[in-house]
Length: 123
Image (cartoon, rainbow, N blue to C red; front, side, top):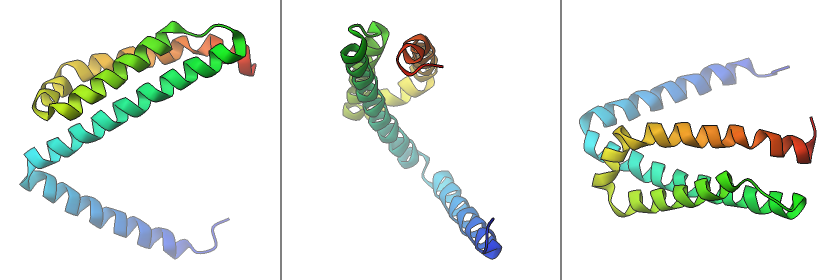
């Protein structure tokens, strides 16, 4: 049970005000915001790639084999993240064209991991 319900009201007000300020900043400087988004996407791509490779290595240690899709996806994610961070202008094109395809492929690859996770963790 929440003891201090007024805290929730104040925190929602503060978050709302911060989001309004962020949206006004985004409208006033869209190119800077897009650059920031591209840097965030590049960093996230590298983190996701490292996580996929770690998943592959841990599962291979445990079972003797690992999903090659995770290894390949991890390597491609790291390469994509480095390319985005090195060339932000090309990243904007990637944002529109390749990111939706990349995210769909990444999600399908994670769905392919489910049998391996059930094998090691159980149902």
